[in-house]
Image (cartoon, rainbow, N blue to C red; front, side, top):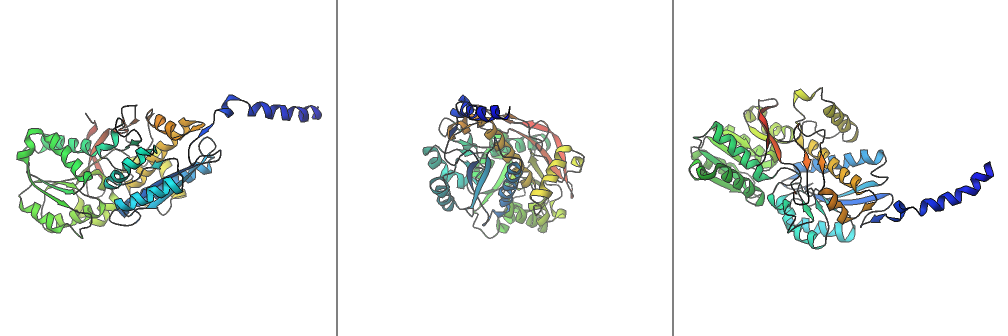
Length: 401
């Protein structure tokens, strides 16, 4: 009987090697039987360095996936390079990833200006610029940029939601606007104005912008207060959002403070600004808020917490960016699972455009949903108000129009 097994083993091996599944394996750059190499640029230094925790969370998530055997037997290797939130540096580092590191795709690179600087290059070279970490509307244009896809709700979508809130709850408001002077800031402002419609001209009484190289935004806040505004629409990154919150409070200005979601983190923004200064701030979320006491018994939150404590113990448990990193990494894993043994750049984009996914750390009612002509994976948001300790939800989850 033992001899029969010996005789059959080579025949079985030959049969396995000749099966269609084995013959159909197709690999793109950076992919082999054991590994999928991907890259990204993140601001580990510079004015947006608070966002670098996203990359650390993603690395931690992939470490867990790899420990469990990887995706279809292949481990994910993420090469995350510092670009300092500087577009020229983003170009340099992205070229290194594509031309030297030979990565399969550029995953979740952060920054509107940074991604704008590499979008044409990546599309010309047919490299997926996948789930970019910015909500600019330009990431959902598959006709002109078929290799680029966003992930989070667009800034214009969020602007529309804030406009709806103003019209419903403060229709006679005088609105002051602060924005970062780039596509990110301008997208948010356009969303607000479009949402306000013909009332935008009369309701918005003052606008001020800042550059990421500015040391502070104190003078802008003082000028916005002088306008007599009763609503402050704050489109600023984490560093400047914390400055704005402190300055608004310190000069005795008491507007309704609407803060863009990218700076709504309790741990990264509100805590350094001061909880007493942050009370009453309204922002928008789509992922579960890790500071929400209602989540303490939520199985998904418990899983996230256990993952953080084991794989990213130095990470801030109050920073929503660590929920974001967890969610978007989970989305990429799903795309790679759907690729099966055809792990090519073309199939990555094909599968990314065929998602219908409920992630455990997204809010109930929020889904990742894409199609060949629908490159905006998430289109729902929830307004929340900070009560001095945590956020309270305001209204229901809103689907963008």
